[in-house]
Image 1 (spheres, rainbow, N blue to C red):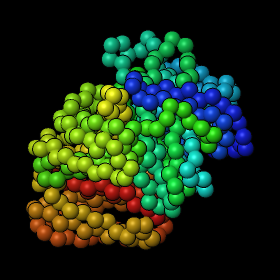
Image 2: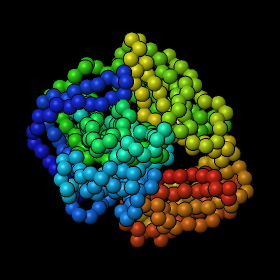
Image 3: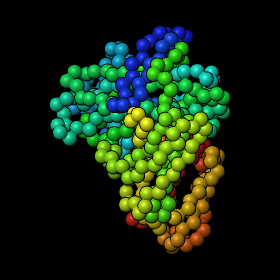
Image 4: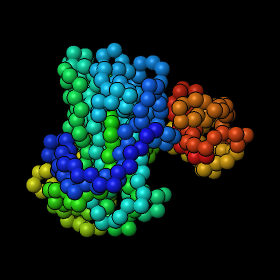
Amino acid sequence: MKLNLYTTALVFFAALFMSNAQAQTCTGEIVKFTENFGSGNGNDSLPAGRTNYHYNGSSNLAEGDYRLDKNTQGSTDWHNINDHTGDNKGHMMIINASFAPNEFYRDTIQSLTPNNFFSVYLYIMNITTSSACGSSTLLPQLQFIVDVSSDGTTFNQLNSFTTAFIPQTATPTWVKVGGSFTLPLNATYVRYRILNSSPGGCGNDFAIDDITFSQCASIGSGLLPVTGLKLEASQKGADAQLNWSTYSEINSHHFDIEKSSDGSNWNTIATIKAAGNSNSSSYYNYTDKNIAQGTILYRLKEVDIDGKYLYSSVVTMKAVSAAIASVKVSAYPNPFVSSVGLELTGNNNETVFVRMMDQQGKTIKQQSWNVQKGFNSTSFTDLQHLPSGIYFMSISNTNGESIYTGKLLK
């Protein structure tokens, strides 16, 4: 993979934002780096830990697949065009969106100077031809989430910005999207994550190229009304517990809690009064009672006193029966070296199935496990031969319901 390093470049940054989102510009840009995904006649995959998507280098891309290639035609209904620069061997990241909104790219930048302005942007193309999909078209919509850290280990969300929907076009069209932020005091690491906020389906297919992270001499349009908006959702018995926080607030009025089952249709289920003006962290919570089983998506709409608003990141929760939700599971050590222990405390005598997978979804080990009501333990051994990287542990019952999914490092 090719990474271009620059010293100084002056660029006008015109971000494409959702209606009413607060657009900003980066002037006097010093480009720290850009990712152009390399070049060549073959296709390639991203380094481990850079994406949650599945690499597919040999066939039409299915939902949740990606590859790095020199042309966009990963399906017969897609445009066939070179990368953003026109290089006939230059690679770009080509993506068929997963059915549920998901993170498709992340990277971490270190040794940054606190209390300075920064921006992250990229070029995106909706690669589905305008004649495909008809009235059932789903359009890509990207969300950038900026996390910051002082030590590179513990990250906290600083900001997020969401693009408009990326339309289908008769001819291939690249669009520049992204946003700017101020790095807080004591923070020297930035992790930016890019998610597709729309669910997969016909039309939600796109290519990205030339991701650029820059320091700015200034950014336009003044202070954001809310910084550090972070939402978390977890199941507690038959309910969903929502917790969120902000770093600071200026003239904030209220939060609308929005809920969806498909990522396209959202309903407001509650409105919570905001702090108004605060230069310290504020904390909020809400309980969504008696939730239905299945995938649930939540987001927050923060509304200012003047009616302007911004959205939080979308969080996805897989709701299960109250009996499954009460099961407690832990996997240790993490990171592991040669073995992984599992502890499960449940309410029933039952058989469960345990599977360990690598980042490409390949099964490393699996076994059935007869658990009793109360505390149980087991382990996976002889793992010392596995290469360093990210692995996943999953536990499901005989009905195929997921009891536990966790990420492990080696």
